[in-house]
Amino acid sequence: MARLEDVGNLSTDRESPLLARAAGMVSTGLSKVGSIIVLLAAWEILAHTDLVTPFLLPAFSVVVERIAADMAGGDWFTNIGLSLYRAVVGFLAAAVIGVPLGILMARRMSIRWFFDPVVSVGFPAPKIAFLPIFILWFDLFDTSKIVMIAFNAIFPIVAASWAGTFTVDKHLIWSARSLGANEREILNEVILPAAMPQILTGLQIALPISMIVALVTEFLMGGRGLGGAMIEAQRFGDSPGVFAGIVSIAIAGMVLIKSLEYIRRRLLAWHPETEALTA
Amino acid sequence: MKRINSPILLTFVRYLPLAIIALAWELAPRIGLVSPDLLPAFSTIIADGFALFGDPEIYGHAGASLYRALSGLGVAIVFGIAAGVMMAWFKPVRVVLNPIVQMFYPMPKSALIPVMIIWLGIGSASKIVLIFLGCMLPVVISAYNGARGVDHIYIWSARSLGASRREVLWDIILPAAMPQILNGVRTALAICFVLLVSSELLISTEGLGFLIGVLGENGVYPTMFFVIFIVIAMGFFADRVYLFFSKRALSWLD
Image (cartoon, each protein chain N blue to C red):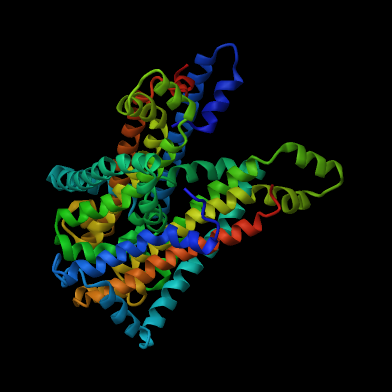
């Protein structure tokens, strides 16, 4: 995603934007890596002082050892795989239903009338409260978790697809129609590309939500996965296990978010926002 | 189509779909489309739910939840605005805080629930700190962006007219950043309810989330549905009331 600093870096050096951009990327990259290193070092030092007990805050090195041990045992891969599987399936289900629904809401008055109050009540609501209902309907296993993930992820997707489609320049649609495009062509050639940046933004908001909800449903219902492993560790007072889960989920989340940013740049290669990034 | 002018009628038409859903909810179990065990009829839920109000226990749970949500959110708003404005105002603060904020912002705060339990136990403290942490970052970022985006001409004018730094902060920067800050607080408000319910569902001894979990485990589904309605309604009305007051607060804007 474009950050304000990047734009600032772009405009500072007029003579050689490419160089400035590269230098900017290296320096923001370095400062990011730098701050992570500083923070981890602070964690390690704090854990070795007498201010906290190892139970309250296990040292970072202990947590890394714990992750390495879990990896060697194979548990880590099973758990992270399960969490990712649930999050991604729920996310995809939300995308497959949410994007068309959002577009239809923008294009059809009756569908907008029906779903508008549903979205405006459902979006800010704490949907996790429905979990006992979903357990009742779909059992304790994967299905209820995936449905809960999709249920949480769908609202930002619908809202973004709706807003993106609704704000497509009417002149583009009229021009295409007067040039003889039918409804299907208008949808595929005009509306979808024009709404794509906002739809992708909605998906980028929904993906971390999917990860969070996957984790929380695993906390609440067990069934392994990173959340299941963390809550089990917490119950046994195994704090390195809890922190190992947090570090793992942070890494997994980062990888997912970065992949979606990459997909965005590929899909929007034609769009001015990407040109601004790569020029 | 004729434009609808009456605001009451407009609200009615707008929320009519929710009434249709409620009606379908009433009919589906009654005509045997779904088992009433899985989906109690809407009227059953309302009737059983209203019986709940006679029991003083519900007020204790609601009070505990509100206390946790409001104190976590309140402290987060105060600290978040202060930190965000300071980040925009003093470079040293920005250099120290910005990387930390950038790094922790994408991190799911719900992941901290087990850590909060280890640190603070299963009472209110763990929930309040969790809500505080989750709500603070959106407020910090919006306050920072708002304060950073203040037009320098206003600051220079105020300074040249003799305003002290403190006056510039209170009379120029805070009002100018207010629209963004209010937006950030709205995000925090939604996050606060989600964190409250998930942490109370997971482990607690009181609170509406706890009540939902207990009712679910004991199979008292109609009442459980009703408590879920209460929580959803609280989230919705908190958002609406907030929106109403933030519009009033910004009425000086064009």
